[in-house]
Image 1: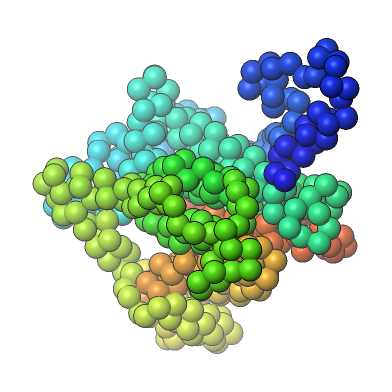
Image 2: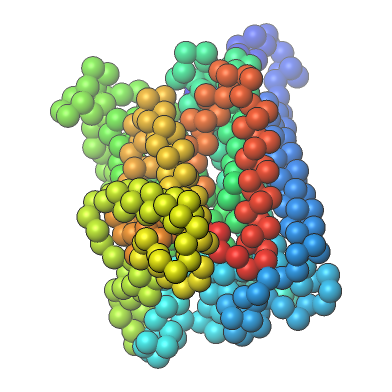
Length: 467
């Protein structure tokens, strides 16, 4: 039985059949929400994690800028001046949300892509359109562009946290301690907190597409678990219009269709059919063919507007990404980390032990060490996802990491990996399960993660490259 209807079903069963006054009356969606304890728990926990984590971001970021200033690269990476000129307080608040890639989204929202201009605007195509178009739509209401981006990101984050809570509660039903236990509820709360206070979670309220992509991918999983394949495919298509990795959602959704677990109907082959499948293909599987439509629509637009339909994939070459082989970026990242450690221990600035981009070799070396540390921490989490959660979750994580781990950057092979990891919600779900079973580790993990979030936010706000 669906855990969403478990408590209402029991209540209805226990009511006297001849007592209509004892039966709940329909009060619309708000009344339905309040009457559902599982949904209300998700709302409360998501709201609490949202406002507390954003308060930490606000205080930590403003404090950093007040003490250390804006950093040396402000004019270099903000040529249109889109992140400044808002006054004493406004500039400090903008520092928390509008740095680096945020400038690209603001430029696209204001000026568009203009693919017909070729080389001069080709870099913009690496940033997929749903987020900047959403930003522009809110700006049409008279809201300043940066404020519009923050509103869009915060709204998406709220939905994402609520969806993660619901998914974790749902998956708890298949675990040995059950969905109604306190441990299952604790795991749901922890999954939300771990997402909101992740080391890179400050991106969720910045003018970045991370929160929008997270909300759409979580929603696609939730709808697929409920057997709502049209909605699942639509959300996955929108995720594909937000980030290129949205395409890989086709794999977990197909696995959920064929292997489950699913809440819409019992398995057709409880013992496993061909290739171990538990559900046969029906006409509703055709919805999954719509998943690539988000990316296809973007490519079609670029082609019709005078540019190249493949420009979003070629644009990655601007950041020196190259195909090294499936997941061979892991090896490149390991070598870069070892050479970075050698650079730091040697104390030399004249001789560089690794292919270097611009800037200090010590800074580049520390970045490579930090990036590999994120990968090293992610590996046991990936194994945990494969062991404790349904197959679709692990397949999604592995497929989503194909881009950063197969297309490394020459000077920093694992560049942006922390941002790729922060939106992979199955990792937070597994860690929540683990922490729910290891109480002594909860406080150190959460406090350490929040401290890292403030540290990386301080670097971001002062125009130092983070991820």
